[in-house]
Length: 349
Image (cartoon, rainbow, N blue to C red; front, side):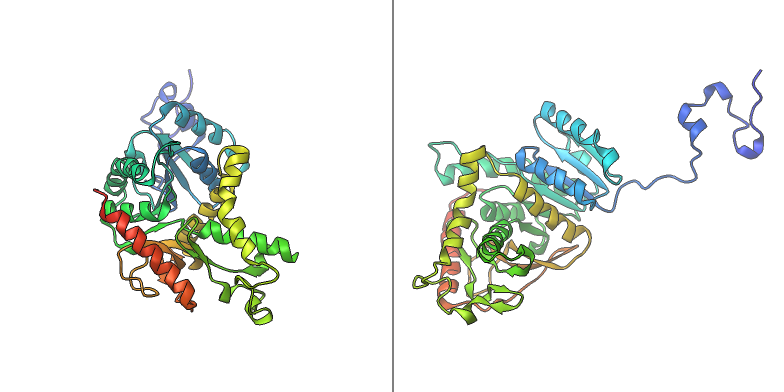
């Protein structure tokens, strides 16, 4: 007959045959934490959502990841696929569910879910469908994580970030959109490619509305602190003989070109949003072009979200860099704000 452990081992009252394999292997010293301080929830496991998830796991900047989607079958498959590779990254807990309770205690909630635009659909119709989707997302996230920061990736990102802010009831600094952060990254890549210099040493911001009406702040474009405008005042203008404006055209056309070639965009926005998540979770206070509440900046008087250089920290947008803009750049921003406000006035949410 097996001999029971001594009372000093705290097992005296437990019969050996009743012990689980785990209890024989491990002796718990104290209860584990109920939730990770670096928990992130992603809503939407499409191409973009999964690129964000994959990038965050490999960047090693999260302790817990929750994924939510209405497609239970795909959700389970994506969860299993990620879990089976956890040997190759530092520890992270990954879970997935159609139930928003799984998002409880999230520090950051990232929304990539949204309707795809139909071939014959106008912008207003797409917006209304996406607003309906957000009505089914935002209240649940806030219910389980009232202290979270919200990051919106779904397009049209500036309008949807405004909608998320209104539906959430959160202060505006805790809601931001990915905005023109990827546009700025694309611009820096094209700049580095033309100059033959590492992209990390090429600096410039694309701000304003994500898409065709975005604005390059040419006066601030520089390499290692040397402004292009000092060497060539015409750089970025219509009179520029070297046609540096071409870089902005490439930025605007990039997304459509990638979609034409491979059917969707995913990796660059995944890496981009992963970087934004790291800034929040690690309180980096780094500067990115994010869709933020723009009223009061550069003469904007409407309640709208547009991209401006934002200091991103653990509480969301910590500050906005007050860039010097040319009169033309200010007018472009103000025009976008007026048009966006006109669209929002006609929407019911």
